[in-house]
Image: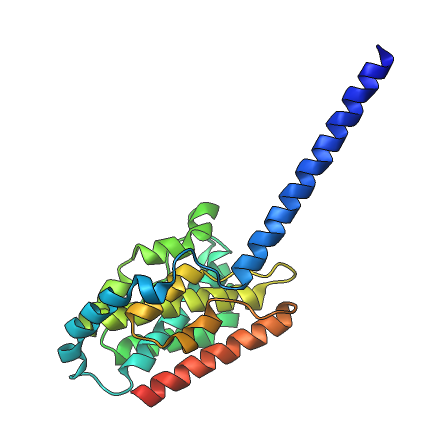
Length: 240
């Protein structure tokens, strides 16, 4: 009877350790896939036909825009995503405290206001954060166009530039998360970045580095991500 009890205890312990090892291996594998920018489907192939339709719908409208419009739209999205991510983690605070918390991102907020004015969109308000879930679902809330920012961009510019704006927001969220990270490295929303980049006509060589993280620790990953943003902005200036 005593031996049977010990066999049960040992078997339970072994199975528990095995389960934990499998879970740890699965999480490590998922992290590596996320860092590599893995997506179930290749966005370039998945959205190729839609990208042609969006480009055709946008051509005439964009002919009336300034050469800097594409770069400005991307940078507006970048600032919008950055500000929402950085301040969203604080939730809803008293106005006086919020003004203090806004100081580190004052330049981003000013850039967002300036670009909104230049593009004829007007000021963009950051999304309200009433609960922790609101913050955790930030990418999806922006994807759903809660607050109507993407719709306003499309109305003032074109359907293609709406996708460029959304690309900027998801990249801005990732950049802010990387800059505020201590130990954990946030994983980019690769599928969303690939989707909107493809629909916006961004070459794969420019968006792929934004859909993954460079190897190494957080400082190296952040430096590489900033450089990838710089190169994309440079390509938008050149194309404009």
